[in-house]
Length: 468
Image 1: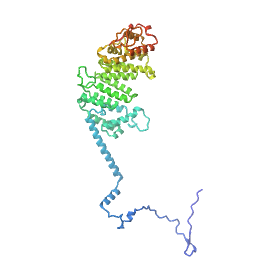
Image 2: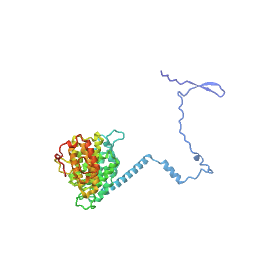
Image 3: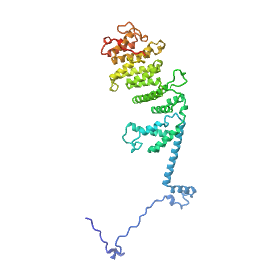
Image 4: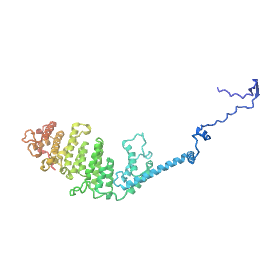
């Protein structure tokens, strides 16, 4: 229960000087208000001593003191913020102009804006109600998380301010403005040597892909990825080899993830060049052969092998035979590791066997025919060690695939001495000739892998070998 407020007293108690007590009439019904409180501050001793002329701390005031005091006491926070914003605007304008001029004067910049960037940004954009920039801490897929960084890179390299990323309409306007500015015949005036140097300088697969895409979108003529056979050596760089060297450099940097991206890149490039009736070149065909073997995909391996056969790359290039050896060794590694991701089904084993020895409907080169040609060519004895290793890997693969008839056929050829480059120090069973020791061990390993010995299989003559 709340206590009631006490009523003011009618009389007030007083004591005089002599100590006598008395009462007076209370003229104030309420207590008087306390005096107002003031905030006091402390002045430095220097100000207190200003009148002390003889003090060492006192000096006459100057105009600099007045100017400094006026500057301190006339500060305006709003004016300071405006000056800061103006300075930031000047810096942004300077960077925008310099980056735009740099992109315009360098047609071989991989981050130059193209028409495909507009479609890519539109396709990868978030829903209309969501901001274009992904906020930190939100749960997004890996692809979505990479889009803001890519857009930041594109805007930074083409002189587009970062504030444009907050508004789709402004961003589209900036993109169209830069694309219209870059539309010129500068790309058509680039030489093959300049393009080759630019491709070799790329430090990422994304930059390499963008540069090639921009170059092809300009519809250039006179520069081929695969130089014609009648082209003089050294007159035009081999763009196919340059791109391959860059791709293999990226591959070494990321052995696990990059092969899949490289294989996708090569597939898109081959389709785009095929639409222009151009060939991607033997070097890239060899890279595709290696990457498809790493992916354990005989269908793609066959595709790149046939593409290389169209320009006779495998028989005319030492690198081609080295790539075939890598292919065979990689598939052997898959068979030995027995990983589920690299497990070959029935159709895949059939396609791999057709790649090795061909089929009844095969009229092109096969890996077997290429290796045999190197083994039989006396003019290329320097390639004999590589060819022998490739043949040995090919023989062991026949054993893994269960191709007993094909294996028996190869044993008959080696036993009869028909393959001149395979004569060595070890003998095959029931033969009077001595093949290479490595090949002999390969035959023995292949026989051990077979469930049925070769001499109990069907006649090898019933197997149609494509000789190319």
